[in-house]
Image (tube, rainbow, N blue to C red; front, side, top):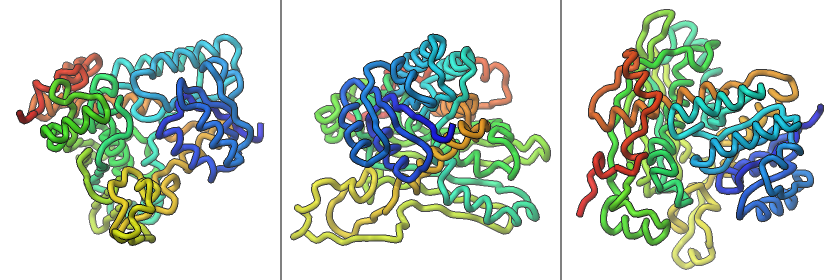
Length: 416
């Protein structure tokens, strides 16, 4: 095998972004897409880009028969259905080498463990897609600061934030379908990348042991009457009845099992960042050294005055989640590369062709779901969750946050 045949389950926002990434990756052919309503449009785009002949498939099982790797990019509430279809196809003669799942792995810890068990039934290599682990600013700072880390010790604190003005699709806003609000949607990014940045060089992703989680949850913008109406009109989701948090911030404390040192990962996420567009901000501090990443510090800016603003039909041509089409605008020339999508696709290719283990598999995805669940529990109970307590860990296995149950009114303040 010299090339990898890949198929997508899903044709929405993340699948479209991954197509842009594949334009920059050699050795992968996107051969098929399954989606109930947008597959053909994405197939046409793939073929127009020259990424090899791509076809629309009607079922996940049929797609699996044509692929080496299948990527699950469909909504969270369909995860188990799609993974079961992949496993069935493999049992019925498909020859898949691996299966990818976009973050988060599942909405609950027990749901995530079921997906791992399904993949284990057919001995499939699993890839948990957390693109921020592959962001070049993160991977390069680890290399650049390796001598300092070796001489002075690892980072002691990493702060990670991802914020924008809100998701594209109605299901993202629905806490039951999505599994929560902004913490489920983007907190998984921030917790994962901070954990990774804190991890000493040469150690596996789960080397540092999570020992506690604190978190505050709030509904600051989209609970206000004006914005509730806007959300209901555009997305059909009523935050007067089933709200989700649009702001979350907290701290995960980790313990180094070799030295006993405690280190901190601070995360902040919001759907109320009404500025240039998507912002990913991270910084980390160690003894005598530090790093900082800001995705809005682009090498390119443009200015569009009022007279010319009507010529811009889509603000997102400049930056993901952009909310403006005039004034001084940040433009990211290559977002798919900046955010790590191209590099995570390259890792899939290399792991399949060279039979290597991925950086992050689904077992790691389970741990991220567990930390997000602990953060929801901390926010609900207004206390720090002790992850060294066996009773707490047992409770997390079946825990579903009140917000994810559609009972957000019991947790969040929604003004009259």
